[in-house]
Amino acid sequence: MNRLADDSFDVVLVGAGIMSATTATLLQLLAPQLRIAVVERLQDCAQESSMAWNNAGTGHAANCELNYTPQRDDGSVDIDEALKVNTEFDVSRELWTYLVQHGTITDPRSFLHPCPHISFVTGLENVAFLRVRFEAMQRHHCYRGMEYSEDPAVIAQWAPLVMEGRDPIQTVAATRMVSGTDVDYGALTHQLMAGLQHRGAEVRYDTEVVDLIRTDDGWHLTTRDGTGRDDTIRARFVFLGAGGASLKLLQKSNIPEGRGYAGFPVSGVWLRCDAPELAVRHTAKVYSKAASGSPPMSVPHLDLRMVEGKASLLFGPYAGVSTRLLKHGSALDLFDTLSADNLLPMLDVAGHNLRLEEYLLGQVLQSHHAQFKVLQQLFPQARPEDWRLEVAGQRVQIIKPNPTGYGGALRFGTELVAADDKSLVALLGASPGASTAAAIAVEVLRTCFTEQLTEQAWLPQLRAILPSYGIDLREDAQACRASRSRTAAVLGIGEPHD
Image (cartoon, rainbow, N blue to C red):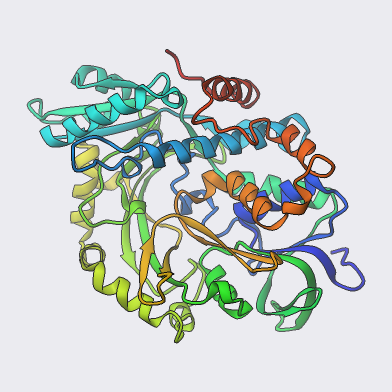
């Protein structure tokens, strides 16, 4: 295990998923002298939301996810959030490119595969929405090469399983980005963790952080291993990247900035198909519109998945209600997070999200037959015998206290909550999550390591790793095209065609 004699580290990251692996990798590349440790409660890395079968795995570039492009009251479509996510994925691509060029990642195909991203809708109202969405997106350089069609024959070429057996009089439309990808974040996390250890970082599995106390020189973390033995780790900086468990640890830290935060756990399942004759014919990810009142993670999609070299199909997810903060957690987790600080925000959110609660309850009560009918809306000729249930990863949405001091709001997305002295930061939330891990790691640097982000310290190396750092790819079309051309060549993925 090669522990340091005094168990004292510059950086301790809690949780061994893609978020901690990415953040630790970037810190180690910028400052190789840092003493870094990763602490994980399970027996291996990437066993929760980073595992391939626990997440959507689209390489969320906001190409096809319709929930990122809401329609305004005047009928126009707002693409601002989509552009933000789209260019955040470019940061991940640049980091992966650097790691391939420097040997940490030996083969991009071990985790990354070209896979077109398609949005598909039915009905006159949805077709009109998709048409307006396409017009707004294809005018922007970030979506160069996006295709649109209302021709069933064209869409059948893009996604044959989606069109076969469909009512020929049904109105349909689709967009396609051929430069999309499928990402196995579990495989990527394993490679990043191996690279961290090779360069001297310490990784402790089967070790849970059960408490943390602020000190004059950082933090003391109490850990408990699988035998029940307690230990203490000292850290100058702590990153809480433990998925839903980050909320509990944030509360244990007692930093004022974390008061009032709560979590809204959402569970789910997928339908999974391993029949090779189907996977070979569906070589895309197809996203449709979410049901009214559903959370963003519940947007129905039929995905090609590449896991350990094998192609499968995944449909869902079907959302549900759970009190667990982690897939491998306890049913008492949510109750452990209740406090006087967050009770009012939780009650306020409960009172203002009755449609969401009704939707989740309906999902829980939905029969397997009803679940399969939802799949057949995207894949009309799907057969029950080809599919089986797969439990999805747990998502904990943020309940954020209102600045006024009363009530709270439910937030879909991710958020960093940092201590005033920048010695600790917690990552809360879910989607788009893994796909924006590199952008989140950069935000950790900006939030907690501002003194090091100078020309005399980390900035030159940071620009070597991420050439677009400091450039807004949403505004700079030339820089955006250059970044995508460079990373596509190294990673072996397609570029959009004009």
